[in-house]
Image (cartoon, rainbow over all chains, first blue to last red; front, side, top):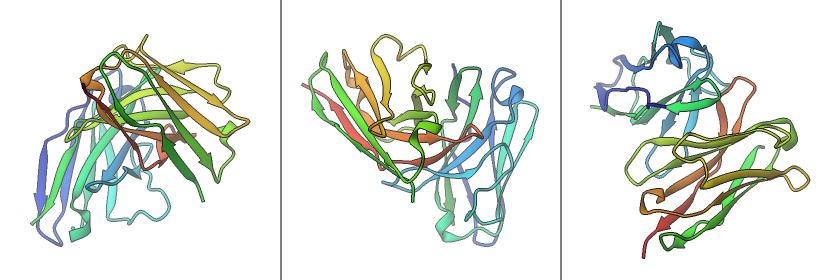
Length: 109
Length: 118
C-alpha cells in the first residue's frame, strides 16, 4: 500500500491559479472515482475540500475544483487567496484499504 | 452539528498499550463507517484503520495488523482504537473521522497526541 505521489510544494501569487497533482496506480486512483482532497492549516484538523474526484461539499468555494485522468488526480485552485495557504492531501480507495498522498504545501506568495 | 471528540492520548513507554476513544454526536453514529487516521510530527496523513457501521468488518493496512484493534460501541456513540506493543514511530496525532457514503472523510475530530518514549 504505497502512498500516492504529490509534489512537496506548490506556489502562486494572489489571484493566480495553481494545480496540485496526485499520482497513484491502477489499483487505487485509476480504479476508483473515490478520490478526495483535504486542506490542513497548521495545528488544525484536515478539512474535506473535494470528494468523488470533482464534487465540492457545501461551503467550499467554487475556486476549488478536482479532476482525474488515468492514474493521476488533480486539485486546482483559482483566484488564490491568502487563506488558501495550507497543506493539501489527496486520498483514494485502494480495494479494502485507503491511501493518502504525501501532502503538498501550498504557498501564496 | 457533527462533533467528534478524541481522548485517551498521552505519553507511553515503548512496548506499552493505550486505548483511544472518539465520542461522536450530531449524526446517527450507527449508520456510518468510521476511521482512524494519524499524523506523525511534521509528516503527512496515514490511514490507520476503518470499521463498518455494525462493527462486524474492520480494515487495517498491513503495517498495523496485529498491533492495533479498532472497535465501536453504537449504544455509546463511541469509536475506539486499542494500540499494543507501541513503538517510537507510532508517535503521532490520532484523528477519528466519519466516513461518508461517498467514501471520503467528511468530518474530523481535533485529534489526540500519542507520544511513545522512554
